[in-house]
Image (tube, rainbow, N blue to C red; front, side):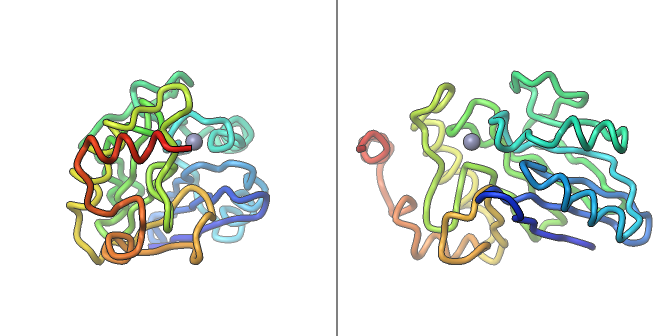
Length: 204
Ligand SMILES: [Zn+2]
């Protein structure tokens, strides 16, 4: 599997996933990195099949139209996304990029349409739900601290500890992490009751 984390402009991360034998590829959150995404696709002679968004915020969907016009790829987002994607996804759906499965985990909290993407059962793309050393804010429109608690503690932390974590922004000491490392060191993931977590998230 080809997998590349891209950060050229600002602190947004973009990801290119490709199957080297079939040459099919997907980009997750092209953000402001469409030029580097295009270069990567060109260099490897990949065919872009999907433009996937972890959620509807414009710093993540930037580049969607540019890449769609260049490659005719389908824009993919959660069914509650306000961006009217070509393909609507929901919890448990599996997209295929060549032979690589990308499983959708619905993780509302930062927005109502936030998803995490489990790539090849080894890499978790967490968008603005979980960062290295942080979690996403819940005070923007569509945000919900109760849903964030459920997404973090009942979904993401239940995954295999060795699962690699690739966030939507470069906010931490390292560009990626693992579920086990975040469980150990991320202060937002300290054991808390739902009530404690909601209080914690409402602090300025
Ligand atoms: Zn966001």
